[in-house]
Image (cartoon, rainbow, N blue to C red; front, top):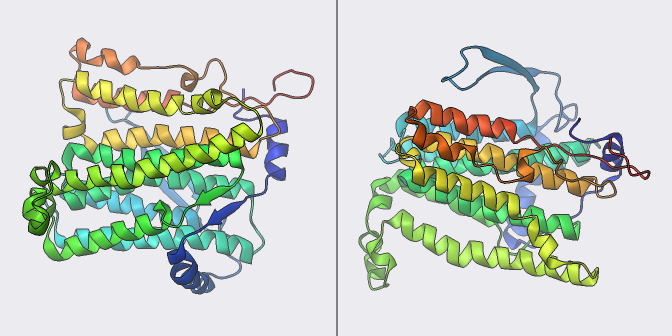
Length: 394
């Protein structure tokens, strides 16, 4: 069974992207800048395919496999931007494996620069597609998939800058939740709506400014109590006694994530009501993401190895890969909207799978637990099925 049937492919060709960006920063500052940047790319360079190929080695889990799979990939503007974030996360791993020690300040600066380049390339690829008349739904899908994975790699980069340690996972959560919410909203409204203040624009700019500032003041500032790092706000109850990065996590959740998700739910509710549909069924689309989060949290709680503390990179990347499949599932469903797209009964994503929860009771090594993470990710492939007019599945 393929990922999507012939009818889904036909629907994909008929798909037209629709998006609205209400950001003033993007309209008056960044869009003009990106429009200038696109002129540096030659017209023979489409955003989603270039003559050159990049061959790289993908190391599968070291606990089980020793062989190396060599993969040839079309080098793309989108992929180049994504690789900036991979490099950023790799720097964090080299200089702070547990994300709880201060890296050299030039690493903080590199985190900011690489994130800025990612944002620029991510914006320029769409402009290059229109400039070369090479826009395609598949290219947009690839771009969206890279953005979903970028949540994990940038969370690791920020964890390095702010010395977040095991709390790095929660920074991934507060980036993944709005991303999934926007994708879920897009599924119902058929329009990607970015409010006046949004993550892809103001959010990313704020983060790379934080990276640059940390290069000046040092990462230790983030590990101090909020009241000590910002003495003029030491009177604020509750957050004044927690680490600075913890206070930022709390404030971002309250003042950014919750309002954004409320905005998504409200927009979906309006569409569902207009179509006389069921809001409960609409909310059910959030179920796989909730299962993924709960599974990882329960696994970490039951594990005797403190996975998030000892292996933050593997946990965040592994969970981020599974999250990327979830996002692509919703995106495929959107782009094949006149083809029935659903979880196949045999797909692990169609039901709760928390096989890894029994690992702590097997007295297994930490490397085996890591293998479980990647193994479960490998099984969580998105099995989509197209249904034709006769009712048969292809």
